[in-house]
Length: 401
Image (cartoon, rainbow, N blue to C red; front, side, top):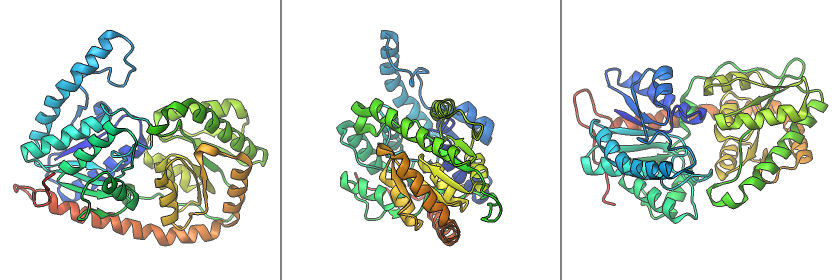
């Protein structure tokens, strides 16, 4: 079985989805051979104990192509990758794309990056009769025609599709994908083990603030610098307000690129009450959040972690998926727009959430088992596609595009 995605590249949310599926496969198919095609193969092998191959032939894929040699290398790499990916897909009985926002454009991306790579995987799967399963994925609409076309065809060519929310299924339907047989479950991260949480007794505890290198969506590239400055200024003023209230703050990140934002806030606030926590995985994030009184988070999977451990959370929302998640968890009123941060209003919302903390904890305690059950049903559905020991996968779900 092959696992495909941007794993090991510094985004702990992506890695969390990988771990959720790996845990399931190891429990349900203990004899299966599993490997990955991913962005950071050395990290994946070291941390998760499975063989992994590099997604891109050209090692400078993620650098800006400023020199002719880089431009030529990227162009040649796209051709070479088509053959490399097909050869990798051919070696497997089934390829699984576990969760993540792999069909999203809520953050900047180029059509010849992940949209192209995913299309190659799904096309190779169809041509070589290796089913490709998109399991609990996120999707969103986009104004970019190349991204839209590659996303649509990748989804059509997949043997199986399911989603983490109804917004994702609706987005693909609007792109022209027949989603009538596709199911919505929940984010795969809700299957992970949960550390013990704190309580509402005792003195005020730390506030975890998840920050992000936020510069808008793929359709907002022309405003990226403005949005990045506005976001950093708003979050800095918010953290300064927390410190002025005497609250200890622990800054969290969800991707390696977020560290510069945390460092900028630390330097600007310059308070012993504000520190940056070292988190290398979703497990680390959940441990931090489990002992916090309250979480204010921007990245989607930071928010998922907070809700999963039952800690009251306020979403600084950069995409509709965060608003939908909060609404599904009964916290729809606790959202603030990342594009228009009003530090004073955000502080008011934070204080209102803290006053309502006991009720919110009870609500989360009720909702979390429901989402965990949905992921369990997702894995049951996935099992029907996976090959039994020595058997062949079920190809019945493959459609004619």
